[in-house]
Length: 196
Image 1 (spheres, rainbow, N blue to C red):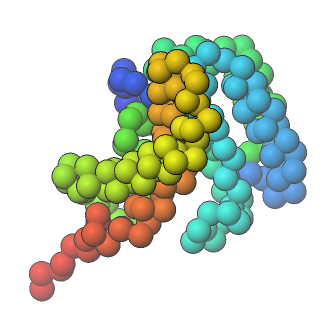
Image 2: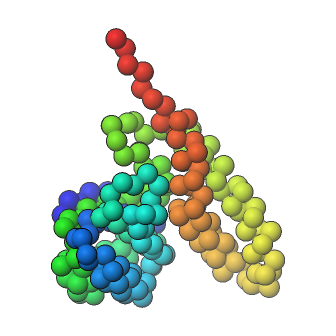
C-alpha cells in the first residue's frame, strides 16, 4: 500500500482511497466498503464519505478501480479512526477483495484543486484558486440562504451557522468544486507550450 499524507494538517481533512478490486469481487467489495463507511460514521468528527464506482468516474477506462472519499473535521479525529480496531477489522474484511490500494490525504481546499492525473503539472496560482473558490462558494451560500436558511430562522445563531457551513463544505467538496475545476481546467492548468 502506498500512502501520502500531509503532516499535521489544520482543520478538516479529506482522504482519497483508491482500490483495485479483483474481478468477480465487486459486489462483495462494495458491501464490505459500505460496512466500513457506516462504521466510520459513528466516530467523532466524521463529516461524510462516498464510494465512487468506476462507471461513475468521468473518463475512467479501468473497470477495477474504485475510489472512496471521506472527511473528518480534524487530524486528531481522523487519527482516532485510523488507529481504531474497528478500522483494522474493516481493512481485514476488504483485503481479500482487492489487488492494491493507495491512500492520499489532503487538508482544507487542497482536495478541490488536486492536479489532474497525467503529466506533472504545477498547481494553479493562489489567486486562481481564490477566484474559483469564490465562484463556487458564492452561489452555494446564496442558494442555501434562499432554500435552507428560512427553515432555520428560529434556531440559535451558532447551530444555524454550523449547519449552513457544513452544508457548504459538503456541497463544495463533492459537487460544486469538482464541476468547476472540470469546467475551468484549461484556465487552471494551461498546457505548457513546447519550445522546439
